[in-house]
Length: 350
Ligand code: AMP
Ligand code: MG
Image 1 (cartoon, rainbow, N blue to C red):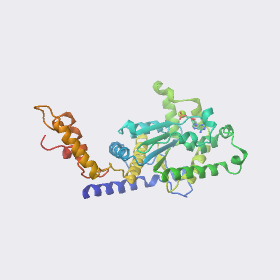
Image 2 (cartoon, helix red, strand yellow):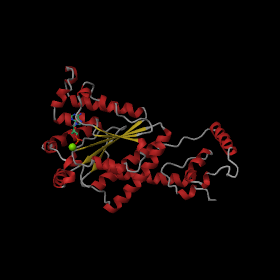
Image 3 (cartoon, rainbow, N blue to C red):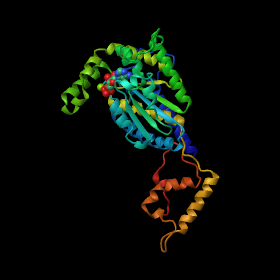
């Protein structure tokens, strides 16, 4: 077990170093154009990046299974970006290995009349993940200080009472968002905030591609051109949101997004790192439960028909679940993230 634990520590340290340049230090003042390079790739070559992503996807799948089994923590992934930065592709690739039962994805669009009839965080609170789940917000409550700020007519539609509209509405919203996220974190929901940072020139190239490739036309809308015209306003709105809402409990990570493959590696790395911090474990079986399992096993073995082995699963296709059996015998679960080879856990006699 000690070897596996060391492997965990090494891996976690390596990840920490990798994601450190993306992290927005709580309390720091961000100017996106000055502080973060959308083309940064940490000296990683694409081929290495593809291998890293595969490792990340595998780790996510392992951790997600433990997160679900432990059923104590939930993880909320907040994904923000300008158009064509690769939010959808990042979700598709990073989550490609996880059990769909343990994940939820919600895309937030222009609020409906019903949603606008509530406080501005209401619709996001409706979509939070449960314990044991990873929930992804494709756009999020941060739209309330981004698009709503760049287009103040959205704020008018929210029909706030005069008191809520006085002073600096955005500073108040940053504080409210920070408090809401603090509350969620205190209650077992870790928040992973990712901003996919795209350059203006790369956005232009991706828009042109969407126009030129018929199968991609559906991804393009006039709204994209209108929003692009407000590029500088969005850079300011993002810079300020990042400055005011990167907190100790829910820091922002600015992921360089000019290379799609790198954005995916970066996003996976931050998410895996958070899961490593949570370090979810399979629940262990109590002495009483173990005794009950033994009795159930004896009863089942006694029901074997004539000529059938008392316990035949090791010879059947169910034999693949041998590690479950090992755990029900009360052995310690493997450390999260430890490399396990199926051959090490399969019964040697088969
Ligand atoms: P898409 O993600 O391309 O499908 O577009 C969704 C659209 O909904 C974007 O143009 C967002 O700016 C817009 N949107 C998302 N949340 C809000 C919000 N709270 N208020 C106004 N518009 C929003
Ligand atoms: Mg769009």
